[in-house]
Every structure is written in C-alpha cells, then in structure tokens.
Image 1: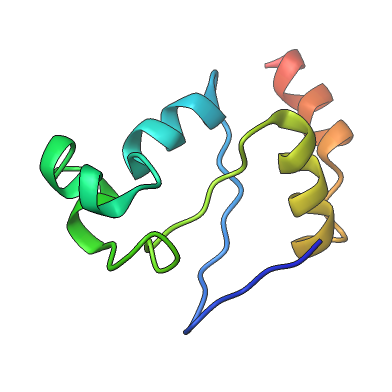
Image 2: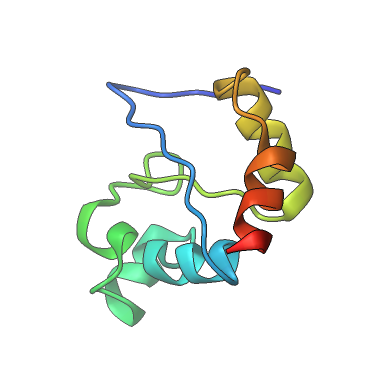
Length: 88
C-alpha cells in the first residue's frame, strides 16, 4: 500500500451504516476542478487544490478500508468492534 501526503495528516475510522458511500458524498468527486463547479459545498470543493492535492481521502470499498485500517491502526480489532456493534 502506498500513501502520499504533502503535510500533516489526521486519521480517523468512521463507522455508520453506509459509511463509505456517505463519506464519499461529503468529500465530493475526485476531479477538483469539476467539483468546485458542481459540488462546491463538499470538502474537495472547498479545500481541494488539484486532482492530486484534493484535500481528503476515503476508502472506495470495504476491502480497501480494512487494508487501510490495518495499516494505520494495527492494534484496532475491527472484528471485535463489529461484534460489539451488532450486540447494541
């Protein structure tokens, strides 16, 4: 897995029903120029500078989310977390 940043990073695990889809809506499309015109209220519309400096990242699938969580949060046990959530 390759990750590139140009500054400080704030990492978070977001959890909710349809979390990936919802976060991607909040981020906005990856093409920043189009996003600034079509979805200016999104994070990329507000803060993106270019397609490679688009201000934010979000996993595009459950599989990539698991991979990224395991990379950045090696002690996080998502299986235990899911079991706990299912009990609530």
